[in-house]
Length: 222
Image 1 (spheres, rainbow, N blue to C red):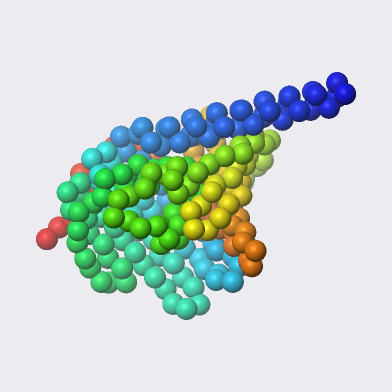
Image 2 (image 1 turned 120 degrees about the horizontal axis):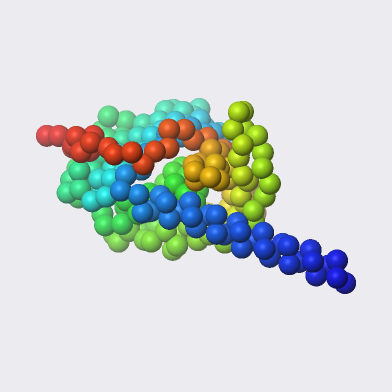
């Protein structure tokens, strides 16, 4: 009985530590004046794809986002640029302009911490966007567990697992590798399972930074 209780207490402690680490990571990203990260990944399952991208954000609804997706059906490239008052969208060469929505910057930052951008955009396809939803409405995180350390090349990563309730897609099981000391993303695996299929998203990250970004990066132009 004592052994069982000790194991249960240890599991609860690990859950608390996992949640605490995740909250530190997300707070760092949400509070930073600027944030940039480069990512690349693969999508497994029925609709296989490879993708690469970069996001840069600055307070005041300023951001640039670029992703290129390569799949059998054809390539897709999407670029978003917001200077805080105007947003330019370029999709496969087609340009359109509108106003950046309130909350986009915060949603991008929290999605960076929680699930990555491909999962976010697939989720957003299932959400009415007249009013941009908060992250907890469409990407609710829970069931945190702190794992051990693993080597990723020359880097030592802390493993963190958790669940994301992705609106319109179901629950996703997430395994995240991060630099625990500096709260830097290294790698992530997201498994989305439905009664009919399982889709696995694998992403690796580089060049994560909170260094200042010049405003000219966010110029929409004429």
